[in-house]
Length: 147
Image (cartoon, rainbow, N blue to C red; front, side, top):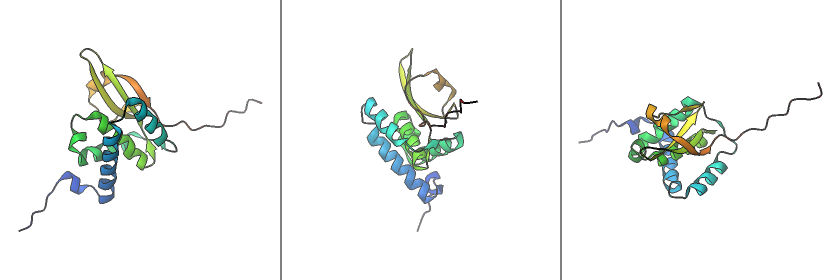
């Protein structure tokens, strides 16, 4: 007798599922580093990526939460890191942030795209950002000042 499991994860195409799992694993390791080192790694990772649009960042977040029960729960640091890394694997970079709120004291990590928090509840707007890694700025040619 065989049983077919109809889980959300099995509905993800194999390539997306594999990429999401790789991002979640990398995020788990990265989350164990001190904040300064995390920021340094993310600043390096974002190089060469174009800014992520909201739909792309949301799809990355959904893929990450589909393959990881930890990321679908309250582990916001790992979820935000995995989302940013998965976006990077796809050639884009969202704005990655961590912040705090008081009272009561709480810390949170999230990603933003197109100026909006991606997949976050409304109460997440109460957090004040402390660390931010936005998309790398591309150097645009300076306007011609001869005119």
